[in-house]
Every structure is written in structure tokens, then in C-alpha cells.
Image 1 (cartoon, rainbow, N blue to C red):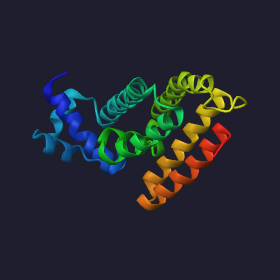
Image 2: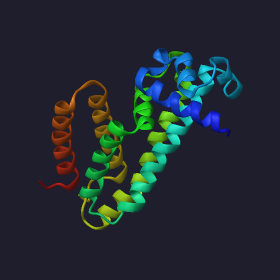
Image 3: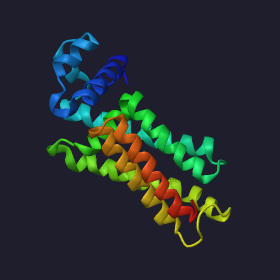
Length: 196
């Protein structure tokens, strides 16, 4: 991929993350890159092609983040591992354009690209769940998880908790997000471990 293609993707990501699909401007992206608008079409067929390329990149970045987090933190107590993943996910949303773009796109896909976006979204959710299963299974073996809680249940409920935090990242402020995190985490872990 040429340097110009990478620059177009870099500036487009910021633009789409900030403005969404409908609000993103190809002319503004071209200005930021320092090229004419029609030059974008040398590298991408159009706005849809560029947007879907960014979706694919964001999917890959988010899966890599989960894999790297697991590799670096797999020896932690499961409680610390899972809570830390929530905190890092919040931090990434606040600081990383790719993460912000990914979450915004998953919740607000352009209607005409809905099927392509949701395909990647569900692939991400399914892959994340599969990646978490061995970590949760290990926690069960160590007695960190109640024996009656299934690893699939625990992983699915965890992703539901993370989804609720994404909603607050998009719609609420820091105070609402913090309240949602503390309350839902407390009840999730208490149910998972069967102890306070």
C-alpha cells in the first residue's frame, strides 16, 4: 500500500471517528492529506470502499488488542484480568481513533453497509468470546470461578457487561460510565465467584 493510501486512511479514520459515515467529508479528508479530492479515487473506489477498508483495519486492531492483552495478562487472577480488560477498553475508546471508530460504527452502521459492518462486528464478538473461554476455564480450574458457572455463560455475560459500557461511552459522560462500571462489575464478579 502506498504512503498516500496510508495517509488517506489515517486522516479518514479521524474524520469518520469524529463525524460518522454521513458527516465524513471526502473533500475535507483530501485537504488534510494535501491532495485533490479526485486523487482519493486513485486509491479507493469511493467513500464506501474507504469506509469498509477502515472497518477491516479497526476489526484487526481490536482483535489484536484482545490477543495481546490476554498474552500479557494471562497469569493474573481472573478478577484482575477481567476488570483490567474493561479499564483498558475504556481507555482505548478515550485515546484511540481506531477504537472510537470501531465502537461508533458497530452501533451506528451506515444503513446501506449494515450487512458488511455487522458481519465484522459479530466476527469480532465471536472471536473475543472464543479468546476469553480458555482464560475463564483456567480461572475455574484455579477455583476463582464458582463451579456451577459455565465458561460460556461467564464469557457471554462479560461481553454483555462490556456492551453496556460502550453504550455509556457513546451516550453518557464519565460520571455515568463510572457508576455503570462499578455497579455492573460488582454484581458480575459476585455472581461469577459466588462471593463478595
